[in-house]
Amino acid sequence: MLVLSLALQFDRAVVLVHAQEPSALQAALALEQLLENSIARSEKSVVAIARVKKVVHADADLLAPLVQPFRGQDPTDPDFIPNEFGAGVVIDPDGLILTTHHVIGDPIASGQSEYYVWSQRKPFRAQVVAADPWFDLAVLKIEASGLTPIPFGDGSQVRKGKIVIALGNPHAIARDGEASASWGIISNLLRRAPRVTQGETDASSRDSVHHYGTLLQTDAKLNLGFSGGALINLRGEMIGLSVSYAAAAGYETAAGFAIPVDDKFRRTVDSLRQGRKPEFGFLGVKPESIASELRQSGFHGARITQILTATPAARAELKTGDIISHINGNAVHDDDDLIRLVSSLPPESSAEFTVVRGNLDRGQARVLKKQVLLSKKFVSSPQYGTAVEPNWRGLQADYSTAVPNFERIAHRLDPAGCVHVHRVDHDSASWNAGLRPGMLISHVQRRRVSTPAEFYAAMQGKTGDVRLRAISSDGSAIVRTVSP
Image (cartoon, rainbow, N blue to C red; front, top):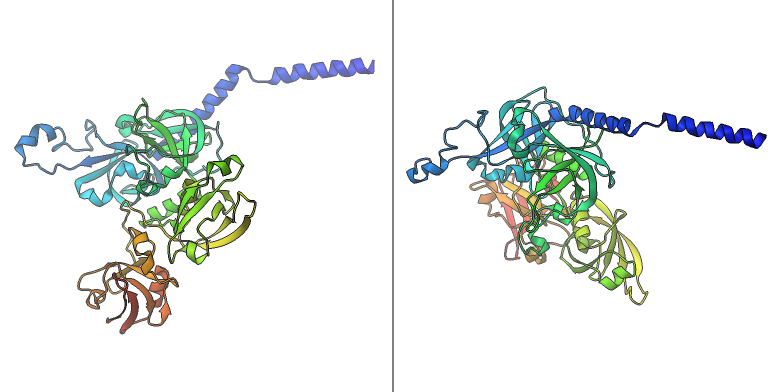
């Protein structure tokens, strides 16, 4: 009887549980409500952006039939349809707009273009505050107040299968204040941005960290114009900034990716909103992926094939042939991983490298831990910032590694540390003292300087003549005295 009583109670409990389970329609309606609420919370923070090229040859009568549709037409006119457009998100109530660098193009050549932003049907002229092609981000400023900033979520914790919503400006139709929505799931993580140049194979030709595998991939439909828009979760938080890359040859549609909102993203955005050019880490090695036989045996990492003189790698006593398997505990699977992880850290950050040294094939390798103080990477595509950069008597100093073709000048660097003369204003005190761009400064008076911060700190309070020890472009040691 006791067994029968327990069995009957169990059956009634099962029936009760099934009775309380939502029906398929109820579950669908609950998801629908979540989507509606998430969009409602975020859509006011998404704006439309247009880049409008100025007519350069307005007096060229032969070109008149080609440029007439855009000549004299006010871009704020509701009937104006831009041919270069994207989306952005509000990050400050007083008019700061975040978008992708490729939406605005090269702001240094902004004399050829004007930027417009539409927020809640209102058109605004926009100015570029700062832009960085390496992280593919830019910040614009419009004269507005009371805007609704989008809340940032955590894009570093997402997993495949997470439901996401994309909000953007497809085909420039969101100028009416209504961002378009698309939804799907996170399809994959740490994806590489598609190659733009046909046949591109050299890593040095890649101008974005996203070519090394940083992106969230989504199956949410991202039409042309979603770039710079928000990829949000069901809480209405932005976990990624959408990038709708052009379709690769042989594919019909554009690929759906997003830059994840993580600590690297936040650090870059923080620099841009202040008008500063972001800075990225540099190690000073040439890596290659390890042999396939080692990978098949379960090993992973990137092998060092060359170490450049007077770089963080040389100072940390890394060696050619070393295999870097982890950086700050993050696994390094190949050379792309190494470049991505190093350049995602800021200069002067100390990173722990796990190094495998020795002959793995013979079982004679050992694992080492190396603390490496990173320097600054040179970004080949022009960065842009409106913040006033430090300047001492007409001279701007930068990290010695942040120069084009660094490997060609590495042998000239002082291994103990020096800074690079980035710019010298004509007819300034530094110019008149014979200092020129490309020189390397190792000492201010008798004080060693290895970073720009150390250089400018050494100049604090100096009002008279200042003696500098430097290395000229031909490698010879020189001394220059800079008068006030």
